[in-house]
Length: 347
Image (cartoon, one colour):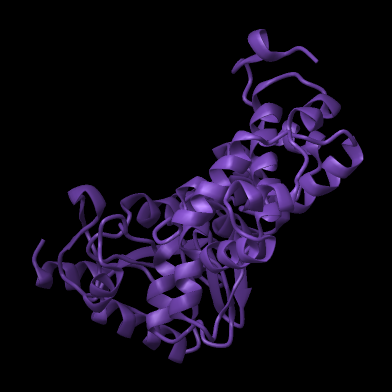
């Protein structure tokens, strides 16, 4: 389609009905194609659920560029930037890339984000799209979130932001940020709830088989996927702790095993990880407990004992602090049916 043809089609496109929400999704090179279409598709479903007599959503895929190849080489049909009520900024491919160099190539998009905010419109980032909002200066002085895998990087790049990696969706004075990938649906459901009502949001979630009761990304964090460079000493300590999950925590004995004083072990471990060996041990025990709750029929008391806790109450309190769920509630939400029940259901 030529530029002149696109302009004719845009001119012929009907304007929004009274009360209809104008949502623009910002497309740019390397953005995740699924995040370009995920929010519009759920909003379209919400419009059908609400019915023709209820103001719905007018959604456009916009870009300051005339041609855009999304992730996987998917070519996107985009429209020129226009005035919208909500601008959604998807995430992009990060692994193996120099983040600074990648962000330097998004000048037109950063300018579009700034213009949207300056005009008083809402701005939303999905996943690592938060880094584009940070480049535009929108996160300074605001609370924000992003994928737990890149939360530390965002906090380092944007020290004036209050990064909250446990949250799925954070909205602060017109700027919304979300956690990784599927959190785009948590945002979309929240938008539907505010624009079309709770009943429409709930029905849309059920129709799409989307969980509308999630509140945290903490249960999904896997510390093994976090960056490990420069942490040789702490990795050896963590390996020893992970191999002895059920043993009582003894700082002096642990320090002796590495031929350092307790004070030195704590200092070096904290310098490399930002937390204590005990905190790592507790997180590892919770991770193992999550697996057992998801994949076996063991009682909570048996799971607690399997990860080193004789008092189920102490274990349950620790588990809730780390995941936001009591053990039984976590099992109900994340149960993997048929995974290991036949082999590991004793106890």
